[in-house]
Length: 144
Length: 144
Length: 79
Length: 79
Image (cartoon, rainbow over all chains, first blue to last red; front, side):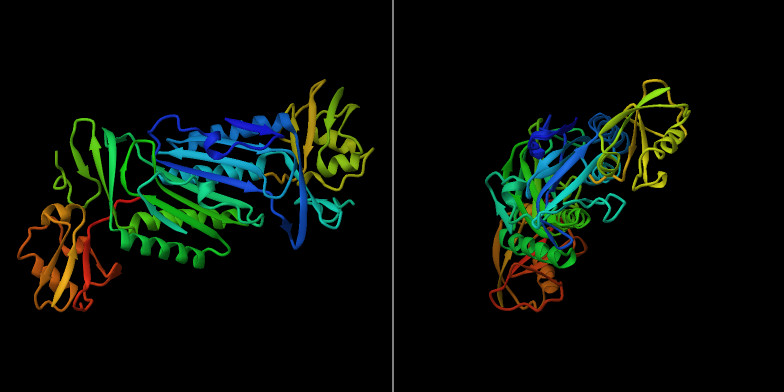
């Protein structure tokens, strides 16, 4: 299950409830908004998303993970819109009878999300300015 | 913080509360009692612990993780006594500004726990028998 | 041929709009990108961008069809 | 010299007790293990075991002192 939403994300346990007692190892990753970036204080963060592509691509990432890491149960959620420091931007959970598979799947999914999911992060700083992060055009994305 | 207790374990979020908003990536591992092992139905599991050694060794593992994976915040908890299928036997959490460090630390800690923590698992099966698991003396540990 | 182009992040800032309908005789996504360059000054080039056609990633060489929704995807920063 | 020996898991099953006081002139943990072999039949040998002296892992060559708490640690299965 892949979720894309503007409201606070479920916890890992809510996102992938224990379906049965067959899975021994559960690995969860949570990415939270930091209160600093490259030495600047971050007051808020805005994720812009291409929703239709993000939903399809998120589901494809999970399907690919299920095929690569067997046997594994996986789920992920990404938030968009405006987030405050400390709030979860992304949650990934992988469960397997074998912890190696659960770690590998969770790690692979967050790496793919960061590489493929069409979301763009705009940081708002404590000096009132803001900037697109990692936009490939350093400085150009800056705006007050 | 390393906990060793006979009561249900805290969730990852309870075990390592967000101290600040400086940590961007949080990786959690939960190991839960499975309802099967090598084809046999498991009804309960008993962990025997050498408590004094386990407490010291658990703390050493966390201290070593903090020295190896910088910067990282870590915590772990292991349960002993009798557990039912689905209950958490071990919880490990690692938080870092960098997800690579958080994944590496969490993975390293659970590997060290499995290698070094003096706990011994005795499985009780649905046919009424029980056995020490991975005791290095296959069959010898079996008892009704 | 008429298609819809959607803009995100720095491309949206540069285009001054989130989406527009574009008409012309571009056959591929690559040709559409060149066509768009005549009306906008973008801070990114094709080497930095991925193409999405109807909400799926696709190559720059994809042949477009009437009514397609195209987006040029700047480097992403989710997670 | 008198020390306390603690037994866990399969060693406890074999010794029939969780702990016992042992007196003798063993100088090291290795010598203590040999000494214990005269009174118990253990399912594991030194190659399978680690030694704990006063609740810390220590080598088999550790020289023991009066009152030490020694445990021979079978392969662990936590986690």
